[in-house]
Image 1: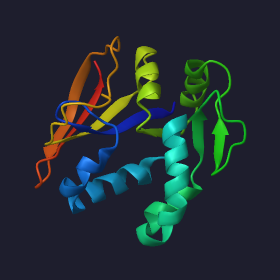
Image 2: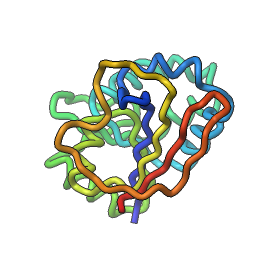
Image 3: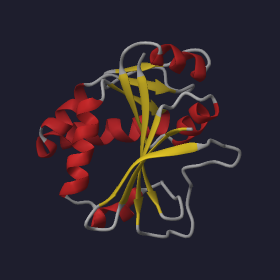
Length: 177
């Protein structure tokens, strides 16, 4: 059976959007950890907004990011969308109910990683389809902005790993309890 892993950047108060606030805290420790995550992934599972943002950015960043950018650009992407019609950037669009399409992907052998895509993360959490949550909690309070967890999303989690970078970012891994 495959595995679905959500990897998210958040502030201490749970804001995840527009993570420009992460820049001053990002270092080699997080870069290496993100590299390990990407090596593990067979494909990306993305919401439409994240897919469009990544598709616009990553092809231009491949030269400066080396193997990481090459893998981001070449690996398959499974995208939850009801508005896009022409897949690009090695993407396929999920068809039918998202939870059914993702359950079918999960029944395979691939390790699928979700980045960003809060609507998708919340939807899949409500359907018990995420196997692991890896969250980087940055020592920043935004005070406003879109939160990772939407009202109504509930899940009990068990901490399986936690460590802190030298810049104060808490990196935690949870699995559903």
